[in-house]
Image 1 (spheres, rainbow, N blue to C red):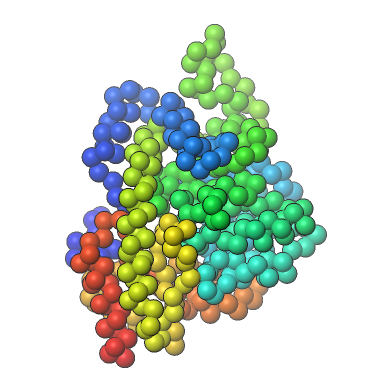
Image 2: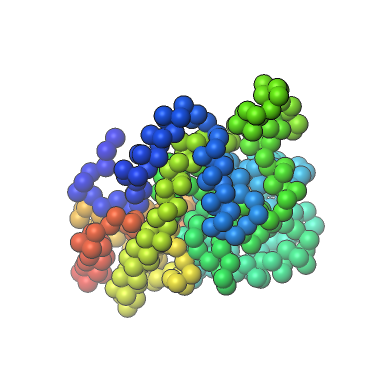
Amino acid sequence: MSISKEMIPVQRPCVGQRELEAVSGVFNSRWLGMGSVTRTFEKELCEFLGVKHVIAVSTGTAALHLALAVLELKPGDEIVVPSLTFVSCVQAILAVRARPVFCDVDENTLNVDIDDVTRKITKRTRVIMPVHFAGVVCEMEKLLTIARDEKVKIVEDAAHAFGSTYKGRMAGTIGDINCFSFDPIKNITCGEGGAIATNNHELASRVLPKRNVGVNKDTWSRLEKKQPWYYEVVTQGYRYHLSNINAAIGIEQLKRFSEFKARKQAIVKSYDESFEEVDGLKLIRHPIEETFPFFYVIRVLNNRRDALMNYLKERGIASLVHYIPNHLHPLCAEFRVSLATTERLYDEILTLPLYFEMSEADVRKVIDGVLSFFEKS
């Protein structure tokens, strides 16, 4: 299924000849699964992020699941998580038989409301899972203080925020164990993939066999052994490893990090300057120099969000809503709470096109489309 060339999409990966050549090299090696290329990608991510351990996995969702699985949670333990995020967070929590405790978000950033996080802490809380929405890093110093005082762990969901920083530290390196996504539309892509980053050696050592169905040494690691066929299954595990094919794409994408970030920052600056004074529209706060923007969200006031979506669609401009709050899904009926800010924002938020290969004409078309809607109303 192809995307219409006339419609400006909300997001689109930027891949080309360099990624094809890298994948071709893996094809020629005939070692398509997890191997030396995956190891190289992990090493480069360690250096880029400034952490001791990176474990590459098949998806961002797998990263979240493994991060929680190695914390030795008990059934019914509670994890505080924003409702305004993708369902991967909740699925990972339920997969380890814990309970999601939904917190509200700050209307200015769409990140966790620190005061509400504090209110949601109970004697059963074991983890706080902040989500760096759209690439803007949460107030991690405050969350670290809460975690220290309450003796709970922090699992960062940095799926949106690869390459963003917080007071000089890379997003996804601040919590106890931290998760990234490299799916097709993320800041860099592996085609499909994810990673866990941590400075905790014990946690990293628990993750490694779990990503490879519980096997203590993967096939590539055993090649030089006297009995390369021999392995031991030491823990419950999952088929969550990252292949050489996907890692090869990620390595090439990492080389382009600076240009990807700069272009998306420039587009966001153009949007901000154009929309700042529009009556009926409110911008989300994003400290642009510290943020690698994942997507661009505006708040459309006065119940006019859907009308703007339709207006843009008629002019060849796609838009989306990120996200349906998790506490409103049937899956989460048992955990449903009232979240006034999240529910109000759900009726207002709209995601506009933002991707590296957007031309200046595309950017101008989006800006003109939004401005004309409000001028005519």
